[in-house]
Length: 130
Ligand code: ATP
Image (cartoon, rainbow, N blue to C red; front, side):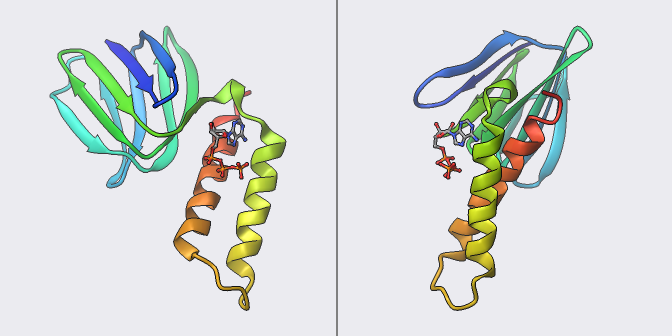
């Protein structure tokens, strides 16, 4: 089956794959060849593909997943290949966002800080096999 990951800015991935695992707002799920059509809203998380027994990891920050007629697509605002992720930057972003959440005195937008934590954690998870 074919799989594309597309953002406003670029085509992050556009290749044939054997398996896809991603994270929707209802939880993680996988798609293999011959799957029934799927449409899902994505959460901030990691998308994994398997190609000839080899795994590749991507971050996918929300958006939609669609599978139909052996064509899968993710349309999202932000996505990165695991190997393109700057680990130091993600660790710093995680530290900043956690500090914001823990600062009881600051007037913070908790949802925004939680989303920043989730993005940083997804980035670190996607680089585990780097
Ligand atoms: P930061 O606080 O480090 O900017 P962020 O979560 O606020 O992190 P985003 O707004 O999600 O960053 O992303 C802005 C742009 O920077 C996007 O193009 C994204 O792909 C890129 N980006 C963010 N963090 C990283 C990273 N750790 N490695 C590589 N690219 C990154």
